Image 1 (cartoon, rainbow, N blue to C red):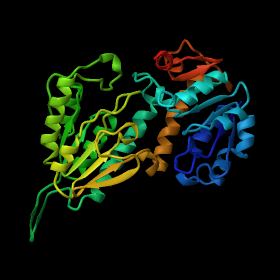
Image 2 (cartoon, rainbow, N blue to C red; image 1 turned 180 degrees about the vertical axis):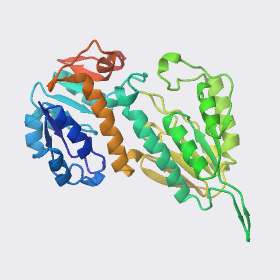
Image 3 (cartoon, helix red, strand yellow; image 1 turned 90 degrees about the vertical axis):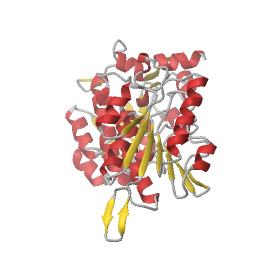
Image 4 (tube, helix red, strand yellow; image 1 turned 135 degrees about the horizontal axis):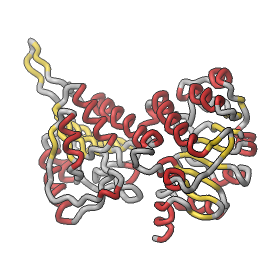
Length: 374
């Protein structure tokens, strides 16, 4: 069985597997093809891959010969057509947000797995690329904010006087939010955090941050740890509370997203206009609509002295460790579908079924099936 590792598009610096992961794959009696310079932007040269046992092959050759194509960003329809009929495609295909590609994979009778669909269960934690990448994103967002803020994060007692600590508001206490809280605390900021899920309160407090409480949230245990849509009354109460705290903040980091839906609008224009000049907003949900009314994907907008940074794929800013974590998630998942060096798709396994976009012309993942019926 042959696994193909492709070079990602120019805007993506991560790679599906680093050389250390290739060594593991080789120990499973697999043949590994890799496109030249696939790992160069993650500081993994071709020589290291060859030493690990991979063979350099052209992109076209890999697409035509590999039994399993492993990547991060989706392939084009033209490249999908080059694959063998029974070859399997794996990546972070954004299958719920990219129905055109999903429908094409189904109509082409392809087998595809989208890693962002890995179920949020205890058993699947080691395969959860969203959580892994959120760890990277939460950390990097705080460093980006610290670089843009025109003042210190920690409190200083100096001969020139005392410097008060920066005030950071983190909206959304999922994996990215918790990592942002922890990083901001390590840098010495005074940190406040908001989340609609009361279950997040204990985690926020354990990191030394103060929890911003808004009573009356709707919660759904079946949502896999994600937030769910709220009532209009709660949303307005939430916006008013955030407005009050945001007006005092030096930095806001927004991380709130609902899978398969537009990100909730939490920081209104009136809030931005009421913030101190020099403040910074890092909107991690910009690519799915944005938590801030004025954010733009992949752009920095300045309004009334407040810089609003809409970021997408922030994990690619730390390609080495992000690739290492991504590759480990991949390896843990591949253990479920590769047995004795051959592909073995067990659709009675809820993780395999939940992650599989389609197989033999039909949608497989319950989330994909549900999206197809809307």
